[in-house]
Length: 350
Image 1: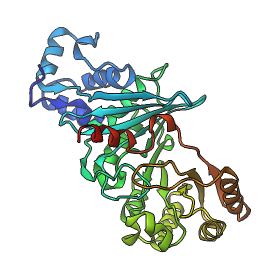
Image 2 (image 1 turned 90 degrees about the vertical axis):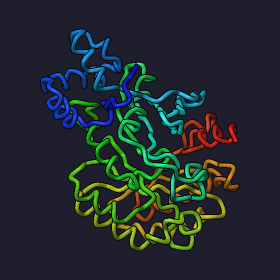
Image 3 (image 1 turned 90 degrees about the horizontal axis):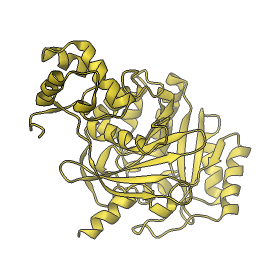
């Protein structure tokens, strides 16, 4: 039985855990031992940490816990081997994580909030509204549980692109990134960690000062306020001009290439005219564009352009010197777009 007052170790950064161990009278190196079991070996039970004495484990259990969510639903794609986990948190809230293996990478896409405030029209995450921010333990748990699906128990890349807006949970986001990066935890290189945002300008400015070599991905989806504003309400607060100016400052300060995500929606933002306007907007900027064919959700009845239309859009950008790739969504057969599986599960209980 875990005491109600137990401190979940996953809510503490490695440095915080060392300080907490010392505060409770344990040697600081014991924290490194426990961290090694959790983050290197995937062991979440003190009794299975064989280099700790029985007495020490019993003392730990009176103060600390290692608490992970339960798997509410699990779906594996027959198309690309990705696996989507719907996780039930301690309070019953649901979040999603997607494990995406390829030949050279093992990526996990993780959520930062329960629901989302920003209501992008094409995204399932915000359709049910916003409930709360996730704690660091709830974010790290997604990575641990996805890693357990990996044949070699490794994750190479992290993408904050699941449910929620990471920058709206900025404090826990940074603590999580630093723990993912820490050699005493996951040891994942900062450049293997991508933070995706709908475009919250003040937080882009803040991140530029953090000294983190993470990848920044910005949801653009329109080259002018009319188009972008029609699908992204956040554009009212941070219109295209201010967003692009902030991104240019970010790139200049960090020397990092910004990725602009652009979901192609037929009849909305995928015409030749919009491609040329996007090319003019981004020409000469330190950036690249991910073109993503729209993955339909029930609440937004649109479709993706045809493959020739997608290629034509891409070639217009490339001709203007803007790097552009086409990224097809993984796990379409398992509803792996952000928030889709959670939305289905909620509807089952309405």
